[in-house]
Image (cartoon, rainbow, N blue to C red; front, side, top):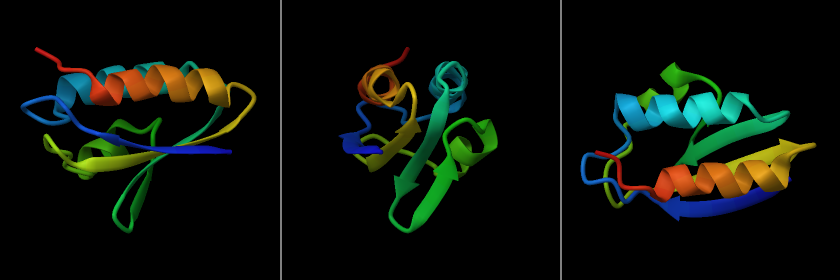
Amino acid sequence: MLTKTFVIQNPTGMHARPASLFVQKATSFNCEINLIKGTKKVNGKSIMGVMTLGLAKGDEITLEVSGEQEQAAMEELGKILEMVHE
């Protein structure tokens, strides 16, 4: 299992478009993916789960991945979390 904390950089936070991009990429990996904000932990492959976190710019989010493709998932999904979307 790999765990790393990221800071949301997008000025409008993790709204529908970046959340959808994250979930689409997450579902392409053969591993378990969770996002943790404070005491709330959600399935990173669930658009509803990701959206319920209400991530805003500057929020810290912990990405937890476990399984066959955990290293690749951590790298790719971490980029999405820190990306500035238009």
